Image 1 (cartoon, one colour):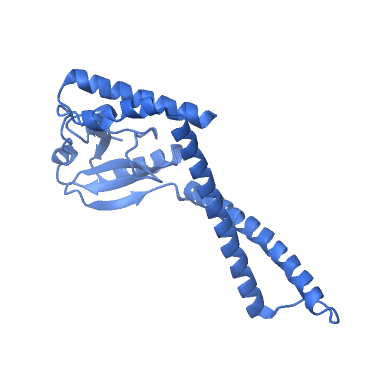
Image 2 (spheres, rainbow, N blue to C red):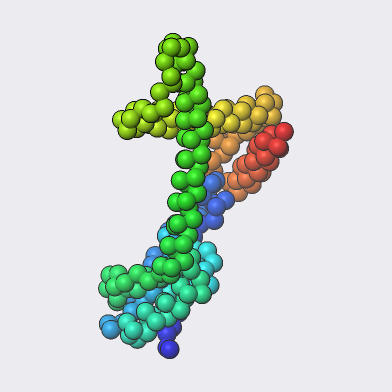
Length: 242
């Protein structure tokens, strides 16, 4: 099966440090050049991650400026090779394109992706059902106790009817969601407090230079900016470990 590999972009992307520091020497966003190399009647295949849609190599590894695409002489060859790639690396989704850049077909490993989706949705359902059922159990116990106190002469009602159970379930889900939200807020506030507590007034004064130095064209000041950012990140990590 014949194909040739070409680079998708003409140059390199700016590094993370260049973007974070606003380095004026950072390269512009590179131009896509792959389409210029696809002749009429040929088909190109680009490889993407099934979750994020970001570029992948044919081996399923993350890539960026080094992204390549394969160009085939026929659609049948492009589809056959794509099926082989998705069989070997199920996280890769192959986008088959014509020489005009239009999508002809998207090929993926539907069996493995379906299995992954089933596991994810089952996990989501589990983590929704467990706290909801727990809250329902508590509410049902409270309901029975209140009923026994207020209507001691009557037997506890064992059935609420379908409308009652819908309302009961909805209330339980809402309370479980509220409890989860409160828990997340509590964890976030505790972490923020740890970070703030780990920074002395002197540290905060020094780290204010990060805003002043952002976008500087002076190489020495840019080095100072990077050093301050790394120091701040390290202090944050140490604070969160406490």
